[in-house]
Amino acid sequence: YQLASAPELINLTAVITAVDGPIKVVNCVEEPGQCGCDQLRYCNMRNPMEMIQSKLIEFFNAITLKDLQTNLAAFNLSEAIQKNAANVTLNFKSN
Image 1 (cartoon, rainbow, N blue to C red):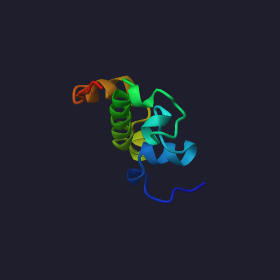
Image 2: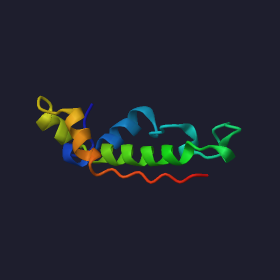
Image 3: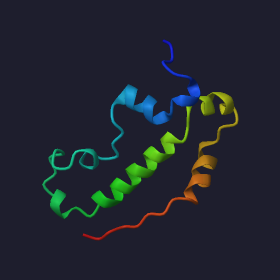
Image 4: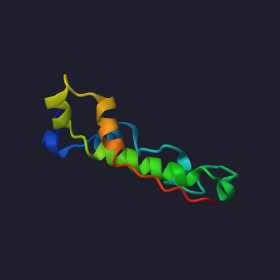
C-alpha cells in the first residue's frame, strides 16, 4: 500500500471513511427517514446525536496521519479529548 497524499494532508476522518464508510453515530443522523425507525418524528435523541457526530468528525479531522506518526509514543487520547473537551459546547434543543 502507498499513501496517495502526504501524511500531513490525510486526517483520521478520511482513513476511517475509506476503511469503514461514512462515520455514523446512529443511522438516522446521516440518512433521516432511511433508518427504519418509527419514532424518528418524536425522537429526543436525534439532535444530541447530530451534535455528537459533528464533534466526533471535527475531532477526527483535527488529527492527521503525520500527527500519529510523530506522536505515536507520546500520543495520549484521553489527554487530547480533555484538551478538546474544554472547547465543546452542546446546546440541546427540545422537540
